[in-house]
Length: 165
Image (cartoon, helix red, strand yellow):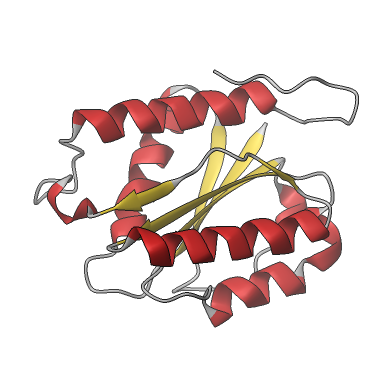
């Protein structure tokens, strides 16, 4: 299994990058092949190279960013049957909810298999230390659970029953 961690964050604190680094470290420790791809650097990413995608997007408004929308449209045919876990980082839950639903609806319409776990992380500025180490135990547990969900879903097929941890 190969997982893409796609970071979409243009804010000063880069909260979604911190979450992405935490996920990358844990997946690597488990021996899971993964690539962290930051849309701040490049958004011409070939989705076909990955079995599963974890989208980690910072959102301070009601809509997803142009860069995230572009990567979705540029890979329109590649989303079919991909396992997707969208994670939204935000200061206000209502804005995160709007972006989460927008991502979910767009990708589902393109045939992606969306992990429906509500994954909106708020107020992350106090959950990491100065060196970007996770210090919040609740978020630590949630990240472990999300990794388990992605790994247990693997390559889903229409006939396979979903496993929820």
